[in-house]
Image (cartoon, rainbow, N blue to C red; front, side):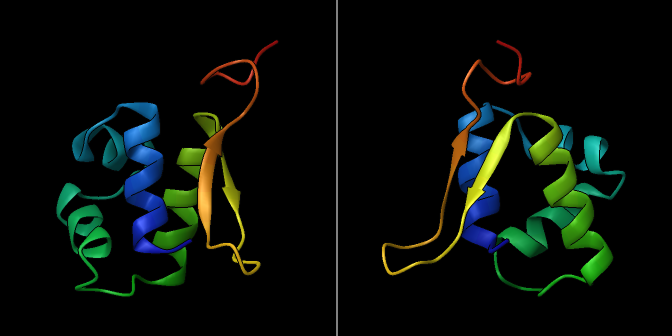
Amino acid sequence: MTPSQCRMARAALQIGVRQLAHKAGISSMTVTRFENGHSAGAPETVDALRAALEAAGVEFIPENGGGAGVRLRKGGQDGSG
């Protein structure tokens, strides 16, 4: 997951840095540093962020020539339906 994918995922979910930090079990400053590219983030941190976003309904689209991105799972943010 790239910093821009993290920002895009938060925007798609309409959640703030504090909400994401809480869901991931990390500090909001850590989220901000990662999203701004000031820190590559420890692998555990990036994994926690990604897991929290995926649990909230985000799917990550890999870089395959068209650019990396995100989308919400069909059925809404909670992944139902």
